[in-house]
Length: 348
Figure (cartoon, rainbow, N blue to C red):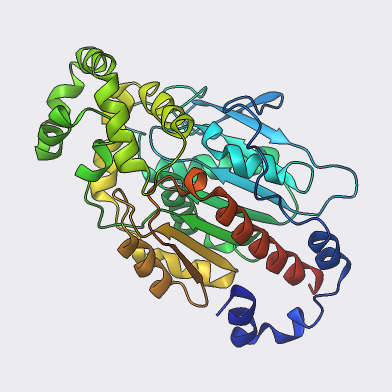
């Protein structure tokens, strides 16, 4: 059953009966191009940067793709995952360009954003960072939040902290390859560091190694060929172009081990399944690969069971980086979600 059908079942028949509104028609005439970005170099999609200062003074690097004239009245905010940066949304950004206003930012300590203190390297702080970004660059209008991996956890934290914003401002959500708790934290490390040090890290020695972060970074550089194999194994399920693996490996390798170690305790402490019901107030899409070795499919199934009328899309055989590996399907599903959100907006 599709998201549109689920909303009908939830009492939205009157809204979806007006699917021929100007918003819905305009969007359906400009479907997302599932192949967008395939002929564009990874990391080359840019817009003029701006800085949003977080509550504790950390500067957050933000980029905004403004829409073409007459585009749809919606802002899509893309929130990236652990040890990545905003460039990971390459295919989604390319597909959304010109159609809607798109906001992307590097999470604290990642990419071009400033370094966080260890004290504030938490999922809860990431939720408040998302609030600051919205306050500064999306002060009005409907918003669709899209989070991958740690970015999805950031969206969940934001929902727990600011439930009143859902429906009134946040009109839809998409959680990709993520969870709200119960994570096997050892799984997070293996794509980030070589397996020979990933195992002892999972056994609780990360704090000790963090005090020698420079030495660990040296091991990571020395073991790049091994690390690339680990990236392929843990980030992807099916065979993908070598350029995809190298692109992810570059983002992982560019994240200092001190940052990896700083956020690590927050994942083990994450316990927010009690808070996700607020997402039932808006159309919510959940997607995950069945071969995800980082946030396994069971997490998405649990989110689906806790978020009423949500839609769960299981991508058979795909790994954690589905936003790259299955970008055409991800874009198609986002397209349908945007369609539903805009139909809903057109009836308010």
